[in-house]
Length: 382
Image 1 (cartoon, rainbow, N blue to C red):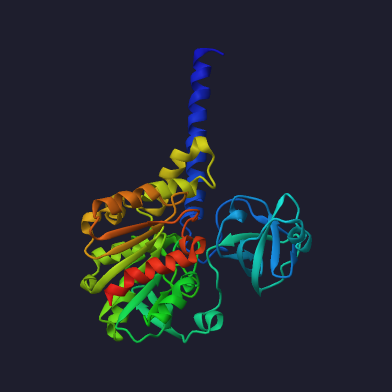
Image 2 (image 1 turned 90 degrees about the vertical axis):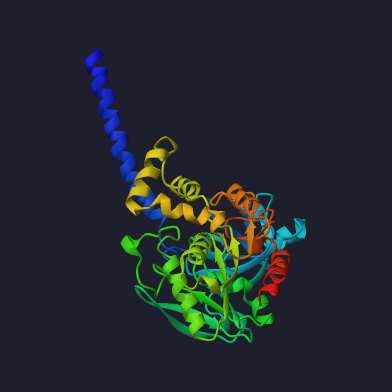
């Protein structure tokens, strides 16, 4: 090819590549920053197949995610079940559940909704319970509306005798059902618990442009929940957030006019390095060569402001004790960022590393250990 032709082809390729990156970036932004509750929750990776069931057990496709230790929800189209640890892979267990060397047999705790049939495509999810705290856990519970800047925010309130309230803030890809995993412990400890649905959730006001903002908008709804608690008898609040909900909790604790009432923070898999998380989420939809441009396009579409989002990772702004729960293998939120945050404020921050925990799934991977860490942390805060 002549030099002019080569230059023209190169220019065309560049233009097409940039155009494709922008298109992919917009798509990636929608996928990465879609508010929780608009898609079935589940860990990233390929879906699993149900190969068979037996008394108290279910056989699933053998994969890293299907072999995770702990307790999880199992979600599919019109389906929700609860599964426990992997069972011994003896021939009897495999035969009873229709398993094989290519499958994993897990304890089947219950089927909450739908039918668990062979061939069903499912995902493991940190959301163990569905419905409401009363229906799922037999806890006393009231439906409440928290006045927010965009409109009423639905919430569940589980009463307790203490005047320190726990405000639970779910994160990426989950709903206010997720915090129910810690409600039995908190109820036994007599903490009132408010689990909030915020902008973009089902039943709550829509998010701007239909996209989440890594807590930079959502913190205002956490602030509204804090004010609601203080108006209804709380003297102090503990903010308990997962993923981007943890980021929103951190921002609320730093920005809210009532932040002096925040007694502590519990942060499960907090998104402290939003760039890392945006890259990880965009990579689900964008080809590797286009990822850098796709990330910039996603950032632009969502209107993310680095100067504001970086506030969440500023440990110097922390004014109360914090417990961070995080798995070192988290592919969505940076464990290194959590470790650096804890190292910067060792007198205020306790980091509990939870091996094998997926993103926002620390309780699931180690229920007893996390419950004990939570009990020790919140007891002095009352």
